[in-house]
Length: 169
Image 1 (cartoon, helix red, strand yellow):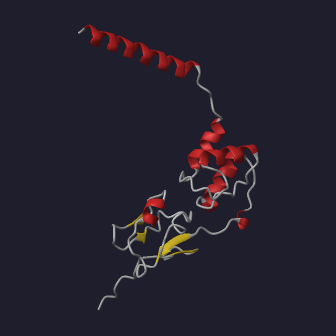
Image 2 (cartoon, helix red, strand yellow; image 1 turned 90 degrees about the vertical axis):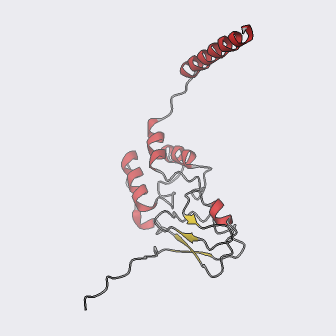
Image 3 (cartoon, one colour; image 1 turned 90 degrees about the horizontal axis):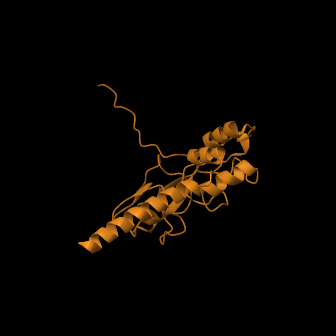
């Protein structure tokens, strides 16, 4: 019983100490960096040349990275970042977003693309055909190099699965 009381006391003391240390030793971040990071897709795809979205946001605020450097974000993200930073952006230089497409006849269902996608845009089961949810795909191209069948391609047009309504007879 005495040992239990010692561990409870020690746990309370250490918990209180860590809580106070986190408040006293906290480092305030730049709220502008936090705002821009919140706008970004958050997939840590690395297409901008930075290790992640936080590093990209810091570089954009410092002016070391152009605000058009996030391909998955597209024109909308670039305009939102330009508004937050108070700068102008030329949207003509921004490439159209890319969308992945899987050639289902070549897909072996190895799940490598499924595991590589940070946005969960690829669905399918083991040893079953996989497909891409084009509304979620950001075109980060992380799935392409891991596909052993090379059945993933990228296009600038988003596939549409909407058929016209049948005509009344």
